[in-house]
Length: 201
Image (cartoon, rainbow, N blue to C red):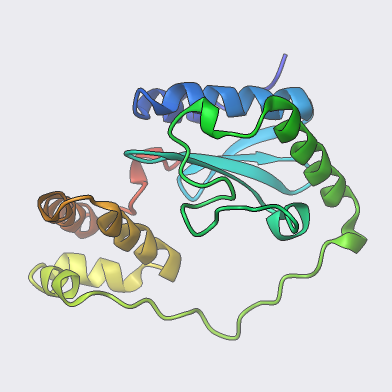
């Protein structure tokens, strides 16, 4: 029997109806391909570990994503879609958008091999300084109107800031963008990150 993290059960249960079969499908394939895999939550979404980071999946309002930690080596020759969404398989809206089970299993097996052959994995160069995050004027103005939110946001890491900014950018309409901004200001004023609901208590 696979070892399942209840936080991922909760993550899937809270995902949109269209996303749940996708996430269950991906989770099952990962466990079948790598019986020793361990589940965890990192950065607010499910990750799968095997001698290090193996792969991850996430759900959003209108799509899901799936990607490998060593994607640059694993999918070097593949037509991946990293510009369309997080991960390497574009915006996944149905199980049919994914490669076949056989193909995904092959990728997972290759990713496992990469994690056990450190000689093939290039060391990650640590950036001299964190890349600056550009905050749009309307977001900066909304933060400035709430001192607590402004103070907490300033303390967030670049990745934590980008999670909020990307959430605004994903909105299809201006009305949705404004609703998200109002909700974000409320959460930020309480010191909450974008995916605070999935953080370990």
